Length: 323
Image (cartoon, rainbow, N blue to C red; front, top):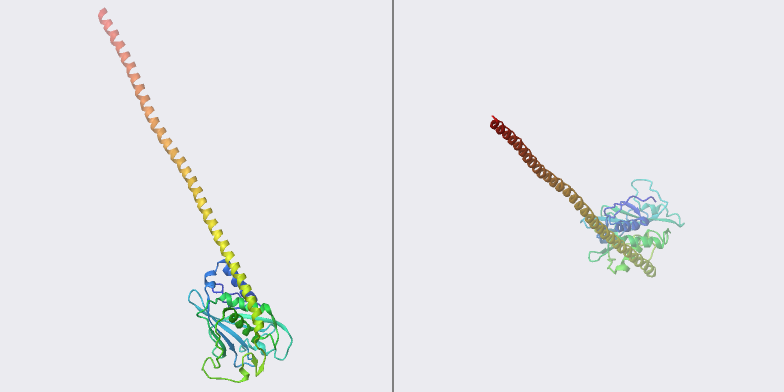
């Protein structure tokens, strides 16, 4: 199955394989690109559903997610045999199961998550969980689906089909978080019409039991969930510590660089001011020395002129006396 690119800003993919959904969410959180939105996306409600108007009587579950920005989205999580291809646009994806009803051969499972517009009003609610008073996040949901698939990724018509997968994901979350599951529902979502009969029983097809919850298996997979959850939390914590250390180092580097640049700018400004002051002092000194030299030269020239004039006067007086 080809994965479709996830909606990176919310962590809710248009359509994706369970194998890639969980790692992608972890990578987005660790990279801090969409960490705030994804980490603060809470699961408000879970519903396990059974399709009504299909021969497959496909089961799946839907999670109502509230994001940090206040937006609400609905995620549909389910299992199909991998080798099914829809033949008409009217066929719902769940008819993938019915296409393989004639074969008991084991094959690879296609476990998918997709964003839908809301609660499917045409299908029946099997079980319902109110999560408003819990702290279950989008990443918890992804981990639960991922560990169930990792436990068994093969599709078996009578043991590891859609009934097993959707029920096991819900049971693992119930085991891990001890919330209350409402198992008394037995009515249509749209009109509230009561219904009964073995043909629509949970985990069954046309009255034939195909899946029954085994608590020992739930406990095993729930243990894997806790282990993976702890690993993811540790990875996110270490990534946060690395990011904070890098940020602190970056800040310190910036401060040091700013100081060095400030010192260099101060030295350059000092040099420039020194040059300007030196030039000004030189000009002033030049003016003063020039004026002083000019005055001195003028005085010397004046004295010389007076001496010449006095010599002429003396000579004239001597000439008069001779006459």
